Length: 351
Length: 182
Image (cartoon, rainbow over all chains, first blue to last red; front, side, top):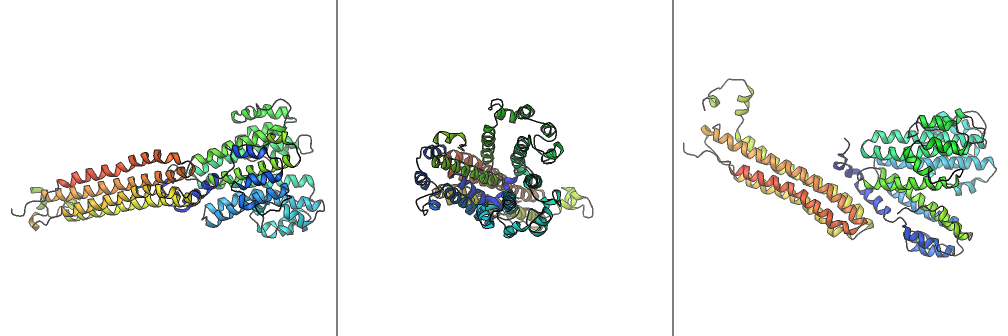
């Protein structure tokens, strides 16, 4: 029954929900970002971050800092918090928390396969993988030559196995096929996650379906824009769109035939939530689209915290942390390369 | 008076109900008064307690103030105990010829109803205060000015249990058994 979750949610989820809300209180605020944007060197950034919750993770780093170190340590904090919550969780919350990391698993798989294609060293690639998406046999990915082997050798034992049924072919792996594979996997993952949340019901289903629909629509727009001018046929493009979300099915029909950004804009402006995003961009410009999408996503993620007794807060917190790490990476890069005038181009304030 | 005790072999439900001893009803009423009240209090305490413990990890200052929510839930159980004790003092023995007299049945039903009133009013009051207490702990951890405002909501919630106790006591006050000498 929707509305009566308050009576039984706290049996299994009360403690963890309170913990995740405590973590949310530690997200960096606009004042912190303003301080960070005015830093001159990476050591200043380290000093400012040591006053926040990132302090214990950065304090032991030796002085010539790199931006990758900062990002790595901040990600480590996220991973520690996630693992702590995962240990304490029971079903179905533990399954929900695991679903959140499958996106990173897909990214890691694609990273290693692409890197192997371009003859990079496996160890170096493993260091670049996102820690939330690691699984045991990930190093074996470097051995596979085509998708069938990829599946048979490695992926059949991972949680990604059911997502592969649509993209097992005997073709060899090349850049185009790998991108198609990434998008097909992600489509299957989003649909699976959506169905799982619907099965959970109640406030979780409602909030997560809104967040996942936005994700599906955003990916549809990005796939469209990135495949304009490539050899991807219209049918192939349509096969990569998820079958849920605000744009399903009529928006997908229109997006599949778009050939430039203005057609994408006219297709999207029929939907009120996306019209406000596209109205911020002037004609012909697509660089600010990413930032506009991130801002809209952050707004929706923060709204998930307004209700109590649902699992959406966990998903929301992980995504907000990832956005914060992206912000820190951008700020660190701008400071390291002395381009502080561009620092506000891509920082999305959370509060 | 004629239809009650002498219709010995009539098989209607009303006769069956009238043949249940008023002491049964009284005892069940007293059991419900204490049992269901304690269920409500326990439910409320675990809802508020789990959130309070989790939130206190990042914000340890909230622990002492938010124990008030637990105390409000506990008060609900105390109401149940008090009413159960009052109800059991209302039980009197009547001679066996009088057990099915109208006055006895009335007293039995009054105690039963009083027990149900108090039990279920305290059940929902405990639930209500527990859920509000959980939200109170989480909001206090984020912003300490919210605590007193949410406490006012809890006070209104705990008044529900008090209403139940008042009506229950009024109900049981008029449970008079027939006098011993007939």
